[in-house]
Image 1: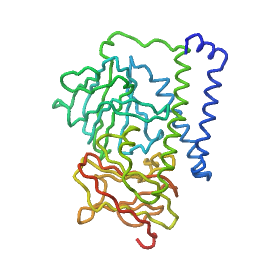
Image 2: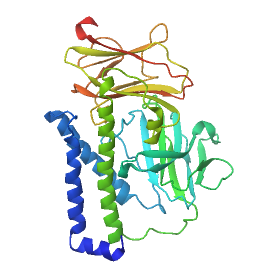
Image 3: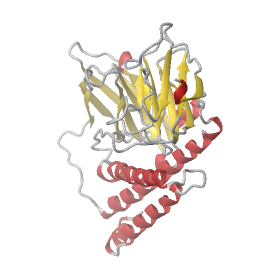
Length: 366
């Protein structure tokens, strides 16, 4: 859009009207025929849109300048999407593949630290494609935990993350096994050669593009993940392997093997998930999500279990119990007031990916 056109849209209010109209259109996704139609799940759906909007405005309006990138946490306790992992700290920033960047900081003691160069197309409903990836196990890190990582298309000696010609974002994943005692990595990113430069002021063009990008992100993400939730219905209350290629196409970690499905439980039912064999892996976890593929509220409820927190069977296997009330056994995962939703299991850094046994039983039979 030409600057003169953008200025006119701002002056006459068209930019804001189009922004509001796009948000109104996004509300139709919550009303999808196969989505739950009760007031509780619909309320969560509309709250979900407000959360996506907050994330979209931050991403497309406040932190969109690839000349001055800032890593921001875009999925957390109150902004959730795409089966966000409660064990993760997610950070991302916009980049320009024609430029070169330096990521630097302290490794910390977090169990897993990975960096991805991606083509992010959530705003157009196209998901996310990884163009380059490196994790801390492959990097040279100083004894005091400090490190530097060059991000560019051109190969560099030392720690290097490769961008492709369409890369537009850097993603950072930190995966904890024990959030209380592990220390997260403290990292920053800067454009190489930016010393002394300052960001340009806001323009009408930047505002219009930012508002359009934010609403496209809301619509694209909500439609993508609502459709994905619907695709789980044929395997309701089972947990088969997901389509791994599809998981990667929408931003999955290449070191993770995913299981996804839907679940639904009556008040007196328990979903029992058994992993008879736990492979050698960096970690694993299970989480319970709502219909909109948001992790349930892990601030106040135990809605996920991982390698560190799980209680194991004498033979080394593990059983999880998903129910509305405490069944009186280890590895209880709370439904947090939900009767329907989606769920995810991850084997992380494993060479083998054993299947899971899932069944529904009565609470009285536990």
